[in-house]
Amino acid sequence: MTAQAIARAEIQNPNMVLVYCMSVTSTEDVNVGRPSSWSGAMDNLAYGEGENQRLIIVSAGNIRDDESWQNYPYSNFISSVQNPAQAWNAVVAGAHTEKVQVTDPNFQNHSLVAHEGELSPYSSTSLIWERNSPVKPDVVFEGGNLLKAPDNNITSHEDLELLSTSKSIQIKPFDTVNATSAAAAQASWFAAKVAFEYPNAWAETIRGLMIHSADWNNAMRNQHEKQNNKRDITNLLRTFGFGVPNLDKALYSQESALTFIAQETIQPFSYKEGSSSDTETNEIHFFDLPWPSDLLLEMGQTPVKLRITLSYFIEPGAGDIGWKDKYRYQSHGLRFDVNNIGENEDDFRKRVNKAAREEDEEVNGNAGSNRWVIGTNNRSSGSIHSDFWEGTAADLATCNHIAIYPVIGWWRERKHLGKVENKTRYSLIISLETPAQDVELYTTVRTMIEVPIEIQTS
Image (cartoon, rainbow, N blue to C red; front, side, top):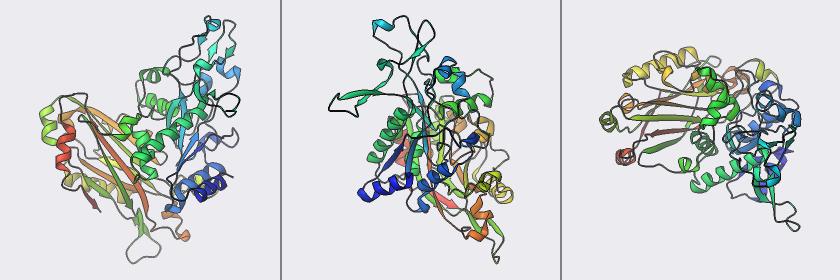
């Protein structure tokens, strides 16, 4: 039915860039984040046979019972994101809330269920999912809030919901909406704005920009009990995704905040020379970015933030076997790495080449993994990987070498299916920003990029 709805939209609008939004979910067949037939179909539709990729927005699924609301937020933490929102390639929208003002005097003795900036009482999470499942939701948008009466009963109020047009517009022109359905609608609007501004942007790029521009507020950071380790980041990701997207950041660079975007095609695997059965890693892409090294050195101890997002679509493996073997659901995986402080280009290339071709998995070694806030383990699941590093300008001055390398998947392992030598697309988004307002990062780099960015394969 989902595929038929998408086909009908494409037949009726053959020349339009479409963003698909679905706010229908099910509590059945979620299974701690493992793929279902429905989520697998969503992944297939997004992948589009590698030629007709689609951007699909899916709501995370809602909590609707009074008993769960009574136990907010702990009930949300154990309420699973719903089927088919475990789809790797879909952008899944959860909900937070900034709705804290009620002007109705009849409710002056009521208290808010969620404080400003926290998780919406309606929103589900993936905290109970298996570790290797994708991070869902991907992002959060406004989903509304609830009130608790003096007798502890939970009630809704239109002041704590979002204004929208009514489905019965001839009777009343406006109505209110809430929960992750409302969040998914806002996510679709956001994606459409990006697609309109950049008509040549791939679906992978629009999805990447949504996540790349997102961040957590202080209320989100404080909603889980602090453990002062990467577990805090895991909890944040599986509750709020990467946070609330920022449209200005997604659309524009500023003088003190610039963004690079690369849309590239890679062939992850190949047969070894002279063999029709033995396979190996094929391409590794190396980016030598135009980098304001002199300016960064001059800035010295000024704080800067480097963020990298890698977005691509996998082709899902068929059947339940796809989840029992971690290499069987994803057709391929891609990862990024950045040269460490003091690591020159030659040493970086040697390290990445050796590790990627010998291990066929994550690149290890002197990669400065502790500098990344999200960390390798938290960012490696699913088919979008985003992380950021905060430090001094001087430390970042020479970190302008980036590698994109493949990790193993069923394209390589299930040779009889004839897809070993398939090519695939990816979008790489890199941003550099500083709170200092008297720094000309954008102008400096814009002058440098009159010379094309060098991309080398190995």
